[in-house]
Length: 255
Image (cartoon, rainbow, N blue to C red; front, side, top):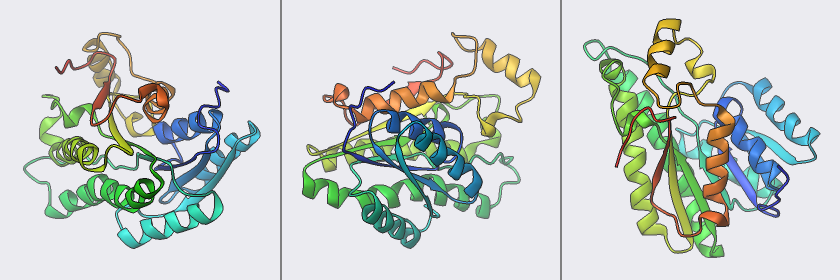
């Protein structure tokens, strides 16, 4: 897909080394963007993503940063701006999903999930917003989850912290769209169950139950989420901001 819509733009994707993040990086690079691939621990996976992009003729660099830490995030932006130019396109994809029973979940687990999923989104957007506003151009997509909109009764008691963090991202998208417009557009994407490392440990029984509950009768592919993110970053979505778009194969229907 060499549409080149994003030619000349610099994109930063947090959590870009694997899964949905990797697919987003590859899709944006195919559209001409210079891509900064953020990772927190797995350098080899980040290098693989970077090398895939370069093999296809794209431009990509990798950047280690803990998005839950403000200083680490700011230092990453400094490095990206030095190497690739100001960040025009931001995708806050980094996140963790820890299952913790509601009766035994500790405050430490709650705070760590919020630190990465919510604070990590905030730190990246807050570091990007001033430059975007000054240049009169910015496009942001924050990755949430369908579980942040509609709890799954089967998993709800084990996903309270995760679902809450992702619901907060939905609210953050709305507030930022109102506060940062018109130069900066902010949207969200709420994936359902997608075949990634994060869902690899889903049992066969649970997989069958979840796919049976979806209108499309399957898990999604990372590339399908990446295509939606690309659309929201492109000018084809020029009249869309503040919305969180569900991509879950018809698992939950939300007005």
